[in-house]
Length: 101
Image (cartoon, rainbow, N blue to C red):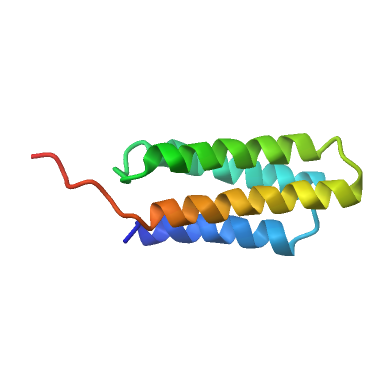
């Protein structure tokens, strides 16, 4: 099982991306929270940390690109970012490496 705080943070970001209006301020806030999780990821020892990191990078790229899009296209881009966060959550659920002695 993944770290509950870390995993729940991933899930909350995905939910917020789906439920909140895709304003520039909200998108920037979500990208900042994803970046923060990426910085925390390094020391957690997740089994699939590279996959999680890849999902975070893809989500941030979607959010960054969405700023230049019209509202309807922006909403689709934001949903793709939420999907990346769902994938990151699934990877996090794979668990942790055993601690090194």
